[in-house]
Length: 218
Image (cartoon, rainbow, N blue to C red; front, side, top):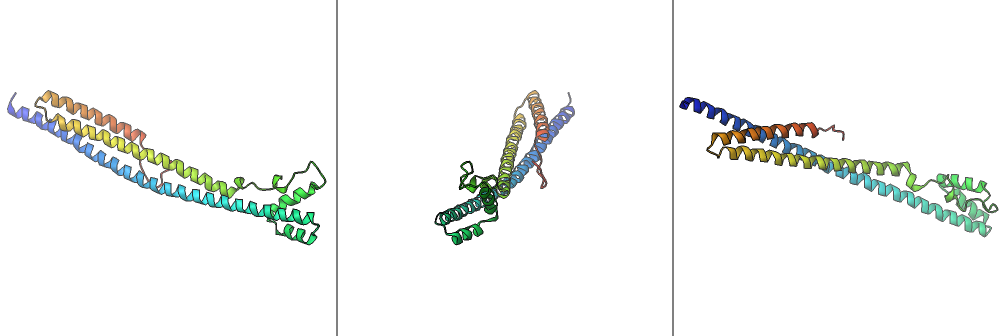
């Protein structure tokens, strides 16, 4: 085989090695870019989850405080009734919150002072709102859960891009070490291994990995 033919074959192999290494570098950089985008999105999603959870805690606390106020006012009403202080009794009744007033009126209709089957307090009535069932409280809790789940998914995606970056680093190693061997047959084996590994890895990655966008929906 003439030296020109050998050189052309070597040139083609060098070109193939360079092409695979070049593509590997580009895709590795792209994986790193995607990792950074998803990591940044994760940070904002965690912040939103924490904010929603704080809002949930605050809203639930306010609901509990309202319940405590209702209990205090109802206790005052009962004491006034026990002492036959009609003026004070009416004062407490007029101080009830609308939600408490609705439950209290329903409770009074059951004649609780004479009916042994009546509910003990208005708080046992179905008309009295349970703080845990508040739409506002539940909306914050639902939002916090949603943001937390999205953050978990984003964290998994960002970690998977790191995994693929490692895979491409292995391909670069294969292609880099393949050129060290003097045997052209060995070089060809490493070249084919790298090409197959690159093709499979790239195909799998673009098949299963979501690509970040500002309007991404998880």
